[in-house]
Length: 457
Image 1 (tube, rainbow, N blue to C red):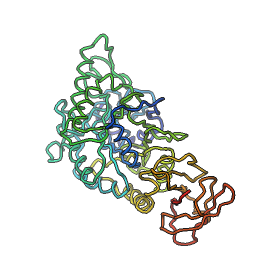
Image 2: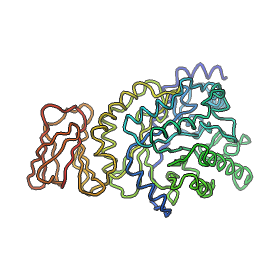
Image 3: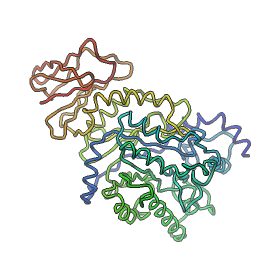
Image 4: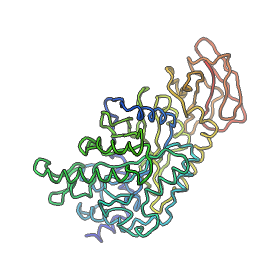
């Protein structure tokens, strides 16, 4: 059976990734927000809102064949697997990828440099996804990059340590992604029962000892990550909202974690309450401004992890997304998956370089800004400096669109009709008629890229 599965898989990886992408489980934004009361967390959140642009890296067993992360082993109707395979056979093949995951080119310094050059200020690294495979050296399981496969003997086998250190050396804020569900753990999916959908596969009232074992297991792993072994963390980003932080005793973990990392931002995503310090709408942007802290998490390609021949979003598109998110009061974390060998691949790097070039010239219109009441007119998005004295406008040039001869909007009237184009540093005249503003762009000297403007009201 395994041989038959492997033969079929070679022809099915791309189809699996594509079909799963169309139907994958997406976390919606939680219904409400509860402000934290810890002054250190509030201060940290305010500083985080200055950063605006970060990266979320999914990397694990799913990277080996380049398929959707973890979900292909979940018994849900939207999952597509190779024709002729059985569920149990496929699951055993997937677990077996731990013997093949061998990132011989593992280079977190390259990752950090690429994302720094792109203008990103914070990072979130997947220490463990739903499949339970750990990218850190856990004492509580052998199912990890440090113990399970050919990379176990590598000096950098405790991969998370080297990833965090590389980004810390480039002055990034450090975030750890951790899945509360663990489908490999016997106390979550117990082998006595059939594999269920994403939740546990037994009745807790009938097996309270199993569940307590799982709570202890999860707390122990969270303490490994947040207890100081990996240095101070800025963000703990918890996925798998069908298991709440309360169910696994997150409060107890955070008390100890914040002794090591004061003000640590907890993101128990989609679980509205005191431990969801910012909201995380996935693959989407809210349709309005939001005054409390939030972050859109959106992929550079169609998938969170690496897939072969990925259809990447253009630099223009990413800048447009970033501009809209910032104008609505959020931060933007861009999903980019390292390759199975351990690098950020060339096509992604090329796009990120273009983004970084734009951010290097126009980043003033993004970083350290806050919302302004009149925040949108057509393709133009507005925000303000923190003191409110300076306004910024970004015209989000779309793919295939040529720069217009002029940009117009209503409201947000420039003082004295003076506007600076951040792209090239040139000052131009804005014509104001009533509440309409028109800025004529120079015929020469501008790239075909989104335009960032700076002015006083």
